[in-house]
Image (cartoon, rainbow over all chains, first blue to last red):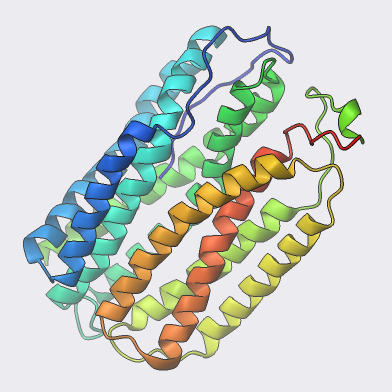
Length: 202
Length: 141
């Protein structure tokens, strides 16, 4: 769930920004989010097997891929860019993550629970029960990191960047949260891949 | 510090509102995992109730500290809080729908609902506080 972007050492006091204000939540994306969430709700209420599996596989695949790609590929590249380039990228990238990640995560988790129930994997007698509990724990750790640590930092950085004179040191400190948690998130995503492929192959 | 003296280069000390509300979130997440691990059967509620209680106490403590803050950017806090609350009420509603759809009823449903209330309030509290602590308080003078 990590929108892992690294913005290391930025200057303490940047020059007044000439960048147009950042739209923190891209409003144009909200209708798409609404359609996805309605699709999820319909799939759950109707016990629509294909809809549930579609949402869970697509959402889960995107969640893991985005987390690992951003953490392992985009993050290190960003760390080597110039400070203006990082700021420019972050200003365009993070608002999209504010919309994409909660949607993908909600889509994955809401339908995943229903898929597990439908396939009987939730039953204590199921061979997959222990794996599912392990996946609940993995998701729980990622949820607390994402919702309690990363999302607040993400939004605070965007607000800071919208100020006439952003505080570079503060942005740097907030973005450090992404670096500190990237290892845990990566490990949890790999654990998710192992658990889900174990469950699917039994 | 008065708002007239606000300096964006200086980070003021604040009580640990975000840490408390995030820890509250962690407690209800653990409680939720315990409940979900027993589904679709009836969950023994002792442990989930304990986690819910600690989570609720921590959240109330965070909100209590928040209300005591002086020279705080309340407009910024409310701006973030209301939109985050809307988003997480929708998410919590979807989780509640899933549990109701799976025939969860009675005291188990009450505990899950209260956990979702803590979840839906703690996340916006953490985010809004993290943003507002660095924002300029309104000029009261």
